[in-house]
Image (cartoon, rainbow, N blue to C red; front, side, top):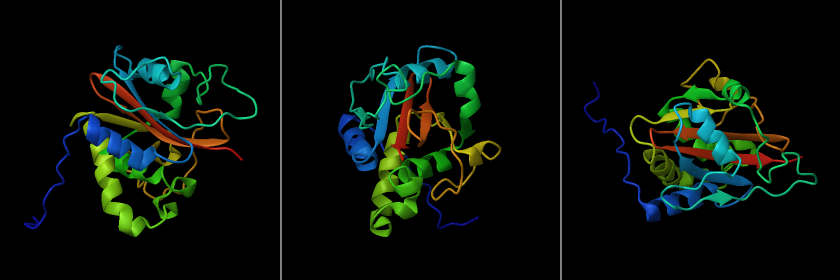
Length: 196
């Protein structure tokens, strides 16, 4: 056992720390970060409501929707996401553990959804990972996490910091990737988009 190992503590989250973390991770580019209440046993129903802009953050904390309009609104809802059935949504999202979930929240900030595409990443790495842990802490120690990264289909521990993977597209854009975070009381959707 490594006696020098000190586990990372989950930061406490409040409205101010949430706002700072969300702006740090999703404050630029084509991004989406929203949370809604968990009202159903099947979390996919609540995730679909958040994606469709039909849910309001129960804590009234900062939400972001910087997804620009495309030439044609293909969703028919004004949301950046296509309207999905629960089965379709379940088939496109794969469960991952907390570590790759935290990696992915950071990677979404980079070009091609890779941390290597974040300017000055080496200098910003610690701060970005603190923001990532802050966002995930909202969903508690028993939070569950899901992504549309194909690498996670059979590997819940996939390295998602600089993934070389395909994404199951869920939006009206040509490519997108993201994370759904689920607790007993809330569901969060954190996404980035790209349009060719």
